[in-house]
Image (tube, rainbow, N blue to C red; front, side, top):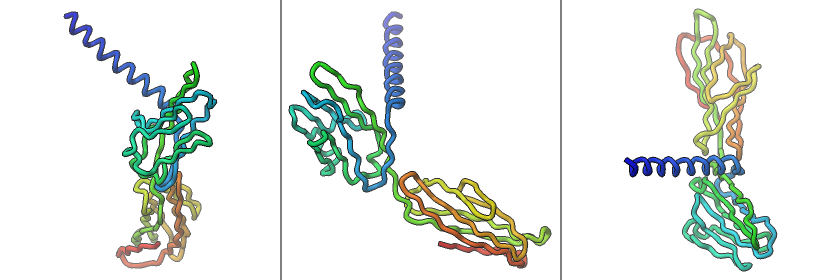
Length: 220
């Protein structure tokens, strides 16, 4: 019974420490958004006397600075994409990829002093390359209106944010429904963005009385 209780206490203790460490990292971390192909500079801006530094990625030490010299610890981690900068004691990760998103930390100490660890949460995004509006329209004879069902589509990043403006409309989301009277028109702009890039496209739709048929239109 004692062994079981001690085991439970040990497991609970480990879980508590893990949760506490995770919450500290989250609260202290600087969130940085970058595009694919950009660079990330990790600067150890501490007093240089007797400075020793470790750069870590998701808890794995990949570079050191000691005795005024840099050392690559895990060269395979960012293969041929690391640059050591002696002027400001920094590491640059070049040509960022989507899979580089994660947690970076800079652990440093000087002579008889342990500096506060810096945490950086990197988010790498694809650039939005293009945006287009796809829509279909149906004539509702009973109400004498055209009903437009519009959708905004972006290429590149798979999860951008969408917004619509125009025709006294200002709303979020990739889909938009509007109704127009015969001969009435609306000019609408869809914007797709993801923090590191933005694209927009504008389309004018016109209500023309038809029979109960549907038309599919794609505009870029």
